[in-house]
Length: 111
Image (cartoon, rainbow, N blue to C red; front, side, top):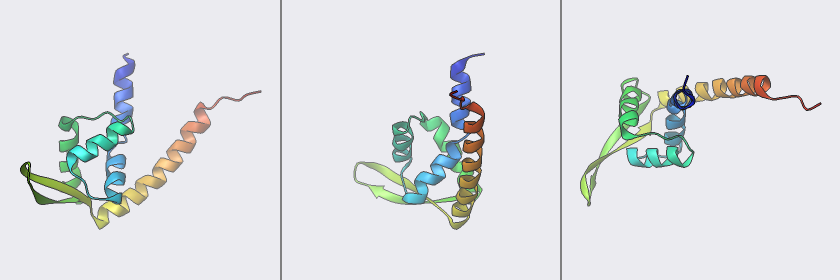
């Protein structure tokens, strides 16, 4: 079993939550989302992000708008929908419970 594969799977499992959280603060262009994820040490590439954004949009959790760019083609800016906000709220509760459970199991007693 390879450690890197397990670490990658753990990161992938929380990407939707992190993307929705980023977009709950402000709309963003995909490269901005990637930068924020990388800054948080959640390494992700465009090939991973774009299908995820499409899936979230198709589930009506995200929407987008086009904006003309002076330095190239138009850019697609994503934002969270009201349904996405509700979904994010539910995920936040689940994350808190999961984090507490994992911490309880993995912390060591210092006796």
